[in-house]
Image (cartoon, rainbow, N blue to C red; front, side, top):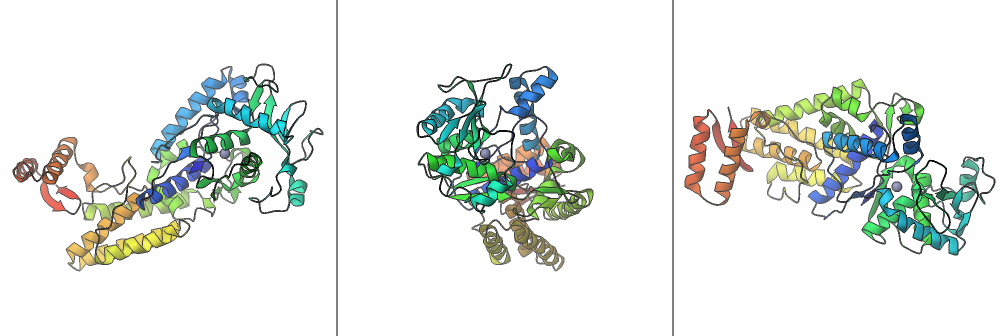
Length: 438
Ligand SMILES: [Zn+2]
């Protein structure tokens, strides 16, 4: 899968947090279901915003891009978004972009104006397919730029000729830099190949960005993405969260005020195609849900699942109600990633586990609680119970004991249990390994 990544010229905002969480959840779910996922997401490290910031701050484009790419990965780590398999940088693919643009120029699919090269969208018969609107209405809706050299207002820039004091790359048709739409089509096809499975991004990218990527692929005679995924945006009040509207609140800012897991739970509670509202009220509501999950983890001393690594196929060993939960949640998520339904099912199961435990059905309760933790773990949400209070020494003993048991070294496992007991821990053998409590 290919997910359009950020242009690194500022701190990531809440919308960035949402799209990365949504596609991280999709990736984790595919992996949990046994698919092998190659996840490519780019960094746009050259564009007008980066150039303008460098000019304003008296630094260089490279410095601006490096600074904000660093901020980007810090925020991603904080919200538990797994690193992409590959992270192409636009500036590393300029040569390939020049080759593609040259071929368009030779076929008169691209044409030259005084400020750059443009793509002639009339050369792609089904242009507008993603937007789902006829070409005429798109043309009428296209912003009329102060540019009378374009054949159609829908034609888009493939290449911008070099301006003084701006970074540029050599090209047979004149030095300059690539247009944004050309970056993604070259990097996605280059890294994932023709007809790759899934191309994702926010709804705002559907048109024109994704339409224009697709148009170039079609014009180059190469099959493009088989499926598309577009996530809804973030609302604050009734306004779309974006920098241009001036309601910019950085993701970094939010993460300094709340448990990062609350944002993931908030995102999971909405369908990925619906808008979400981020406000003190919706965050507080997510925090209350999180508190219930953590209380479950404490009550059953659940192991902390879903760390940094992606969880692979598991959960086949559950029985009874736990197995039914896994089946129901899988059905919901396999149906266009219906996370709100899955989360509702998981919270119902949480209540059921508590009721079973209250009624003395300890084993059934524990198995259901573990299934809840495993499934939230599959979505990248880690429950934090007592286990997170375990100090390093005890954690090391637990891990050594689990290894000893896996190797059937029972005497060593018993010795490690005694060592834990001597340190004041109660030791039990749970379905997923050693469980310790104070
Ligand atoms: Zn893109």
